[in-house]
Length: 271
Image (cartoon, rainbow, N blue to C red; front, side, top):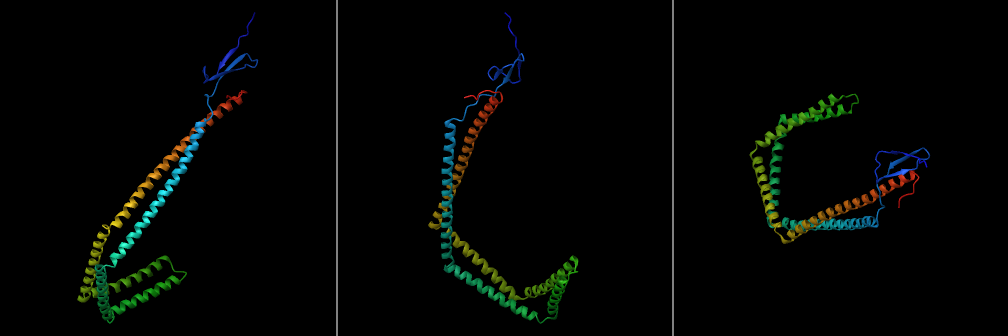
């Protein structure tokens, strides 16, 4: 009794546990082809993990929103407390006296300056310098209004105005610096402003020692920490959701690969 011998062709990748022998189709050959690795459908646990992760994200989003709202309220309360306490400090006798001293010093300086500038207006060189400013400004305006004026011409006209104003300022500064009343009044302005800053700094130091201010600052710090932790937990929950979805997607892709392979070889889809 004779027996037909079939020659076997083994394709690359075929192993004993990951291959299948296909019918020879009358060609006298048996072809062993590699199979995709076995893959199971996403389990109920996999799908449930995605749902649970989604729920956790929703809860974390709500907690983060609540934490940031609490931080906003705490910051608003701190601002209110600060304004209230600062208002009381500004109305204190020391601040009122210091501000009044600044106002008086500035008025004295302005009066001394006005007197010097009034006398300066009688000087011929000062009047000529002021007239030069007017002439250069008019010339600059004429150049700007001309359509055919070039960039360099406009720059030169503007520089002429600047030079004329600088000459006037130089004469005024020399006159003011040389007047003893102006110098004295300016020194009093500087001293009064410095005293006002010192008084305000001292009063603000007492503000930071106020219990209401202290507890308002503490509430902001606690709310800020809580918002930070809520944001951190939300980020972790989103990462867990991504991981859960990727696990399901990977299993679905592997399962589809097996199904496509089986279909292409005329085989039923594995269970």
